[in-house]
Image (cartoon, rainbow, N blue to C red):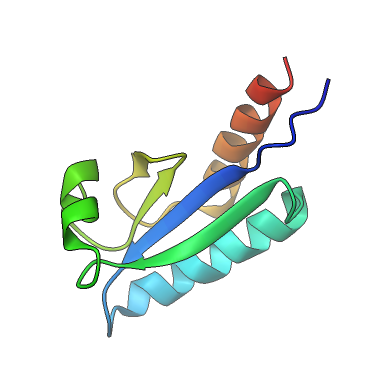
Amino acid sequence: MKSKKPVQVEVFSSPGCNRCGKVFDVVQDVARRLGTERVVWRKVNVLEELDYAVELGVLTMPAVAIDGELVFRSHPSSAKLHRVLQARLDARCK
C-alpha cells in the first residue's frame, strides 16, 4: 500500500549563508530523484520564523528538519539525506 502523504523537508537558513545554498541544491536533487510528489521541501528563513526554528532546536544554519523533526544540524551529504528520506518513505508504505 502506498502512502499519499509526502515527506516534508524544511531547510533552515539565513540570508547570506553560503553553505545554505549548497544544502538547497542537495535537497532539491534528492527530492527530484525520490519523486517530487513523495518529497516536498521549503526554505525556512530563521529571521522570519525564529520562534519555529527555536522550537525545533535549530542552533546553526543550515539545518534540515523532516516532518517537523530536526534531523540534520549541519549540511547532510546527498547519500545520507537520500537514505533518511527513503527510510521515511518506506515506513509510510508499511
